[in-house]
Image (cartoon, rainbow, N blue to C red; front, top):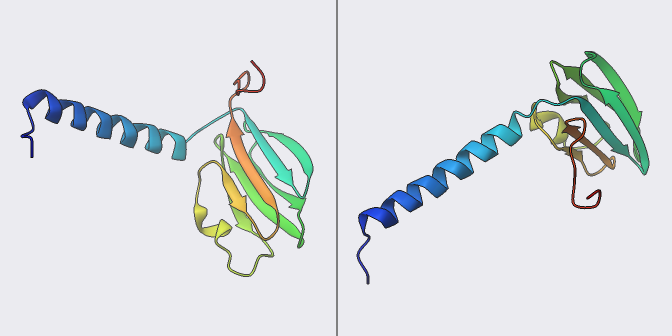
Length: 114
C-alpha cells in the first residue's frame, strides 16, 4: 500500500471542501423564478413575491410557500408527507402527487438551451 504524500492529502481536502461547499450552496439556493411541474402542467412564480400557493397534482393539491427567494412545501395529499419535511431547498419533490418544484435564476442555462 502506498503512503499518502502531502500533496495527496491537500488534494483530498480540497475536493471534499469543494463538494461540501457546492452541496450547501445548492440546498440553500435563492433564485428569481420558482418553476413547478405538477402532473404534467408547468407553472412559473416570481421568487420575489412572497406568498402561499397551491397546485393540483395527481392526488390533489400541494401547497407551498415562497419567501425571500426560497420555497418549501407546506402540505400535500401524499400519505407519508416526506415532501413536507424536505425544508427550504431546491428541488422539492412529491412523487406520489407528481409535483416537482425548483428554484432558478433568470437567464440560467441548462444543457438543452445552449
